[in-house]
Image 1: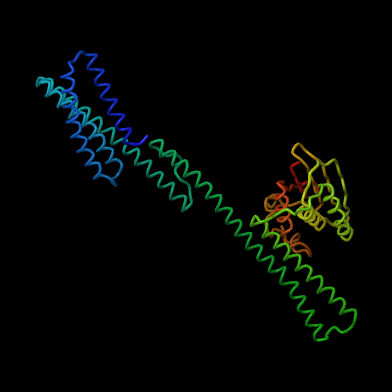
Image 2 (image 1 turned 180 degrees about the vertical axis):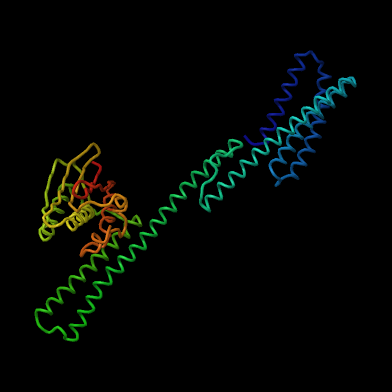
Length: 398
């Protein structure tokens, strides 16, 4: 309902109530019309005066505006009552008594308006302080006084402030991760490039001229080139994940087949590292996964587990199901990860301490890629410590 319609409805209700009272009291229709007309004219004049003053007070403090509203409302009532009293020739004594009542009512109305104005002003300042803390940081007021609208606005601002704080924390974490990624990638690019350049120069200058040395240099150059290719592939895959552009391949296979393929590929790596690969399979639900993306995610987890498990240790791959779907676990014997670092394991470029970080494999991107590819399957991956190392758990919906 618009303000105009509301105003008309209130005026009509007032006239109906006045008519009902007059009829109930047995007042003649002519006298009722005179009373209503005189009262309406006097109150209307007071209303015009109050509205004019209130318009001039726009932009002033709410306390001043409420005071104008209270005085204007009381003035309209007094004007109507006094005009009606004079029209009915009320005695001077009764008129003086009426003015005494009006004086007391005026004082009460002005006091109430000032108090309400103070409450609203205080609440407005508190909301303003809360809004400033959204930009500057810090804690806002514990509670906002005043009308319910201000309290609701403060609650909305507090919710927005909380989300902004969380967004700032994520932004700082992403910035730190970006810096760390640049540092690690720069190192990982610089080392093989320096090796390739040195060996290429040695070959060009014929410093290495015997056949065995030349072949070794060729193998080293090829190996470093493959490392660089793998690093570039990881960076490209990570950019697809972060941009939300991951599209699962069209080739879908049962999850058991994907696990078998990953284990077959990891067996030779484990053998070279002297790590025993143990399979503990249970029934898996009928779930299909993208052959390329899911196999790569599982390969990254297996590669991470094998690289960080010392020779003579073992990596257990366990599969099963729960109420929600398939469950895969990769359990290594790396010795565990410090508890404060567990939440960062899947961060880009995170490699833990120096002992875990600067190894021959891994660019610090594998676990981040694994999480992104698993989540592209509407699944999740998490990590926890156990007695001898870490346990990575993949969950996929059935």
